[in-house]
Amino acid sequence: MLDENANSLKRVRLAVISAFIINGFMMGTFVSRIPDIKIVLKLTNAEIGFSLLFISAGVFLSLRPAGKLSAYFGSRAVTNASYFFMVGSLLLLANVSSVWTFRLALFLFGWVNATHDVAMNAHGVYVEQAMKRRTMGFFHACWSIGTLLGGLLGGLFSQNQVSFTSQELIVSLIISLVAIGFRSLFLSAEVDRERRAKSEKTESASKKKKHGRTLWIFGFFGLCAALSEGAAGDWGGVLARETFNGTPFLATLPYIVFTFTMVVGRISGDYFATHYGVGRSIRWGGLLAGTGLLIGLVIGGIPAIVFAWFCLGLGLSVVIPLIFSSAGELATQQYKGEISAAEAIAHVSGTSYFGFVIGPPLIGLLSEVVSLRWALLLLVLLTLTLTRAGRVVNAH
Image (cartoon, rainbow, N blue to C red; front, side, top):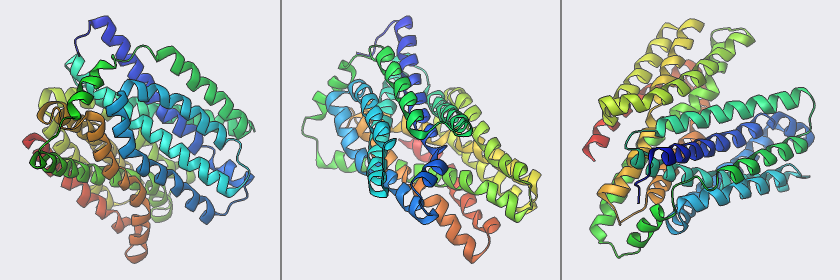
């Protein structure tokens, strides 16, 4: 089922790249306009903060159904269908008139984005297997590039006073064109259908328990990475500006460096995983992130914090793509016929993505007890925990 000629696989890879870019692009265009939405709907900081939790609710509640849908209909079908639900959620989001319609739209936005996320990651696993080389890191780098492009477009529109409604109409048109242009380039639906048929067989309780336990462990390490990634992205600028008296421009440097190294690390991560192994790449990544952050926090000052966020971005960049890839491999090889790649990824991402939600507020609460600088030592502990993840991944 996975045998494809070289030219065909290049087209498939291009289709998956487009899916990752669009998923990130969709998120970037929205996040960049949150300040404008806040003004239009006349929301307080507390109201906008509470409203954004509805995205997380949509994400978490969608992950299990997304895995089941991708296993039943195939990741190709779900990825393609999700594009058009994306358009619907964006158009709804662009036409809200009250805080509760806004929250409903955010819930649907999170649901659709996560469903597309699970399907495209599952398809990425099959593409890796068809190409017989690692590409998941590059796919996730494309997601980061998509968020950057979306953020730049949103910022440009905001600067030129283009309404959020007009922006989302343009974004919806872009998504529709990409969906139409790439819909036929994905791997055949038979790739998933084969696994779906097998997954319908009765599996033993012991095997269910075994792969369930393994995926929970993978999810825990994904949680450590996601919590660190989310907290680093949100608190680096605050640390630079308030703790070390950085100028507004210097305060942006930790996030800029972090984002840049995440992209570079994910692009190069496939090479390192291929030549040095997945477990070793994750272990080295965790060690680099943890020790770099510890050194930066102890020394202090803007240059040290920029160095710390450089190490954090580079070290964390490989972790989630390789954990997702390993979960998919586990499903299609060791537990073939017991669970689909999409269901495995949904299981792991459901645990992992919780880190993005709890990371920033957890650091905020700890900073009230100690200080922001020393509260961030929690990330040192979490990233160094990832050195153990490398051994666990290798063991499975």
